Length: 153
Image (cartoon, rainbow, N blue to C red; front, side, top):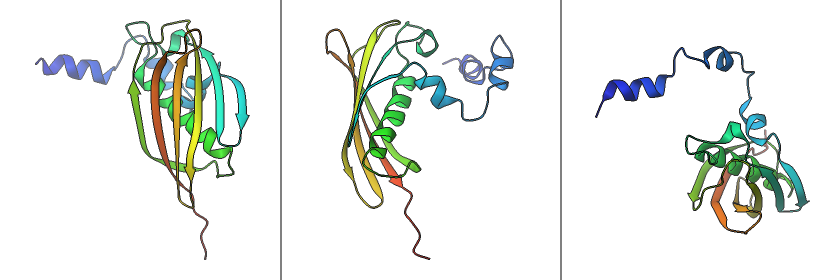
């Protein structure tokens, strides 16, 4: 194991991206990942969106980055929870993603988020990403959130 190469890979100081990264606004991640989503359906407990895999979200293999997929599970899961009257605020307790196939650059993807349960303090949702052309599942995620509970004080 070459520890110095691992350190260099993780630290990413200097280089072509340093000024770009430092100039990014706060809270840029959600718009960065969700830009280009088309909302196809919103109903109580369910959100369906589609998008074409953009260059900014692919990894070295030219397919949708796992971190971008996990961020989509977070964003779309939160949106679905909101459709049943839960507050927008809340904190992720768990995000679990099973990666089942690759979604390549330019490929059309459909993402469907379904609420499993919204209680007083906890909400759970599933999110599935599918290839729009074939219906083949790219990833399945489960998102659990702690909802902001109103104080009785």
